[in-house]
Structures are given as structure tokens and as C-alpha cells.
Image 1 (spheres, helix red, strand yellow):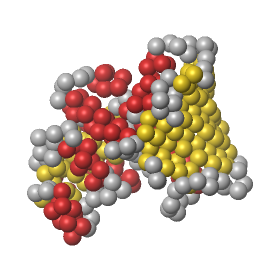
Image 2 (cartoon, rainbow, N blue to C red; image 1 turned 90 degrees about the horizontal axis):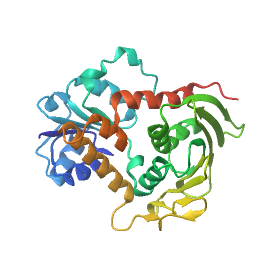
Image 3 (cartoon, rainbow, N blue to C red; image 1 turned 120 degrees about the vertical axis):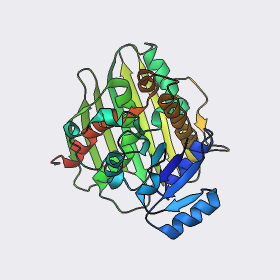
Image 4 (cartoon, rainbow, N blue to C red; image 1 turned 30 degrees about the vertical axis):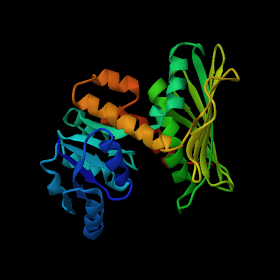
Length: 309
């Protein structure tokens, strides 16, 4: 299988995730030819180019270019097998204008469901130990380098667990959002027919990206707490069911657990396009095909347009 990679920044991560799934990159495409040639030499990639046509004969494409280019590149390659970094788009997508059948082998990389602690939460929820989940409370804080509007930080950071929660409970609709006058705190409420998700998002004073998520069910509650710190990479505290630890936590030692989750997502994707698992099984495992990703992202795009205050 000939694999082409678009993107020379985060795209380099996928050189490793695909190599661990026994696939090497044959073509690297990016805006800066010299940079691509340098990376290609370091990573033993046969061809570097700035021309998308260099990918015409590739069997599988990895899209890891800037987010505002994702949808245009996807639509340039109908019928291709495509593994696209999140998100599909930074703006509203007219789903009626997309022939999703032509992009049946296009999936979007949302790795959060494939973290081991998160998978344990999935098992507990699906086993019925909480009963019917009625509400979800998410607290998320961050302090990361970069210049962005605060609402854009919200979208970028919250989307990781938001994708997972949508995977479990279906697409959410935005019901309310408010940004505090100091611009450093956002509250938002999303709902499905049966579940309410309350999010509190704020800037902290510790370099990090942290999540504290509680699933409240008829029989009890389940807590998932962890995230990312630059000096320790991704981690999770012990998953707690009714206050009782269910594991010993999850920590990055020899390899960042976030990279492990990405590698697992790629494994499942490859199994899907090879026909080793069905699309129904892929969905149950937490993969997002293009249509599912567009539907999930809509609520967060609606938030970005919401008339706050």
C-alpha cells in the first residue's frame, strides 16, 4: 500500500504511528520544498514535493496540513482512503453538499477514545454500572503557548473529550454559552435528547491542558481526570467509580500515551479499510468517518458563532 503524507509539522507524528502499523510513507507533500526534502531524507521517504498531484497514485493519504485546508484536500481526492487530522473544518460545513458515499474511506483522527483510561470508562458505562447516564460535568483548564482568541482555545482543547462523549451518547446541540467579561472563563451547555453536558473552561496558571470529567448516572458516578503537562506528557489519575479507584492511573513512561492512542486509532482505521472489521465495529470502537465527524464538530462550530454574553 502506497502511503502519502500531507503536512510537515504534526504530520511527522504519523510517520511513526503508521510505521508501528507496518506502513512506511512513500511521498511527503508540504508548502516548503526544502523543509520537506530535509524531513524526507531524515525519515527515509523516497519523494518530497509541493504538488498534490504527486499523491495521485497513492493508495492512502494522511492529511496533517493546517486545519483550514483539510476539507479542500479531502474533496480533491474522492474515493481515496484518507486519514485526516482533526478537525474537518474550522467553519460551518454544508453536509448536504458532500457526497459522503464518495468519501466512505475517509476517517478523521480523534484519538481520545483510544486512551486506556478512557476505554476503561467506556467499559464501565456500557456495562450498565452507572445505570442511565443523566448528566456529564466537564471542567477543563489550560495554559499553553500561542496567540489565539479564548473561544478558539475552548474549541481546540474541549474537542478531545467532546468527541469521546459524542461517541458514547450521540451528537450534541449547543443550548447555552457564556464568556465571562475577563475573557478567561467560558461556561457552555450541550444536550442530546437524554443527556446534558455542562462545561466549565478556564485559563490556569500551570502550563498544562487538563480535564476533570464526571459522568452522573442513576446508580452512581464515574470520574476521569487527567490531561497533558509539557514536562510529563499525557497522564490520567486512577479512574474512580463512586469514589473507588478502578485502576492505578495511566502515565507516559517510554512513550507518550497520547502517541499510543494515535497508533491504536490508526490500527483500527487500517483494519476498517482492509475489511478486517466492519464500519459498524469501527464506529463502536470510537472511529469517526467523515460524516460522523462533521456532525460531531457542528456543535463546537455553533459555539464559535454563538452570540456570547
